[in-house]
Image (cartoon, rainbow, N blue to C red; front, top):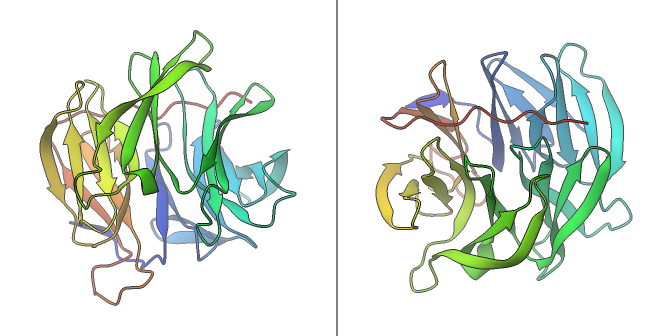
Length: 273
């Protein structure tokens, strides 16, 4: 069903705020943060957020991570993010179980290998992986011991082990390989049982993979370019999904959708500054 009929050129970063019981999402190309019935305009690309407390989000833009006050709309710089690089912008991101925030960057024109995946944790911003073309699928297993991410162009979702502080160690391994298909992984989120829900760009659906990486379910999305899922609702069984209208002219494209499921999500993790 349609959750919000606002058409986003590039909807991304849905976040269910667990204490406000409120969904936030972005239109990257429109430079906007949305919630139902309200939006905030930025002067550059904004793409993803984590929640800090009842009234503040950590928002990723083309050049920074900043706090955003939901009540006033005020922003305050936390740390620059590739601010010296005019080629890139932020893309997919999510908070991890340890209180860190992972954020991917990419070329504004999807320049090959221009992006990276970074982690902000307790004041430190560290590059985790470089040479990324389209950063996506940043998500965290509920046991806190592994993370997933993707470079959409490779058609592979990678999995990497995490230490006790949430930093990756060892070599990332392929978790889901879509290279023999025409499917491209976009945003993703784990539920509480360790199933991965991944939006498939251009395929109008969210695919569900079990903890071993086998596909077990699908959720059709009316918008052809599904971009990122998030669990929310009072019991965390509602699956939200943003979509993108860029390059399309269908009536369903760019809206934000919701589906009631038999799965239970994780509450979004809190960012510790």
